[in-house]
Length: 118
Image (cartoon, one colour):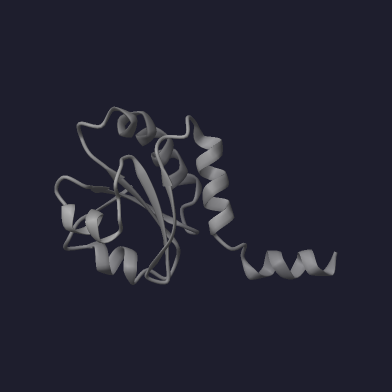
């Protein structure tokens, strides 16, 4: 899984061609540690479709403030350089996070075309 910081955020998140999920976290945050393995698992599942990475809010306060991160953990979904949605807090498992990503990431064009023909 990628780790973003002030040096890499623009290139790897804002200029990314695919959607990016950013896990805003801190080392001292208990719920962040509970959510981390789930986020890592989803990074593998969405490889090639969605980039998933982490950003330490204590080290990168400027970025956290810019995107209005008021509590952690917060997941931010970026598309075409814009924050399009966020999920605040650990929802208690993989299914709610996966559903949130799926709601925010459009299906591939081939899948949409096949659905129209059916």
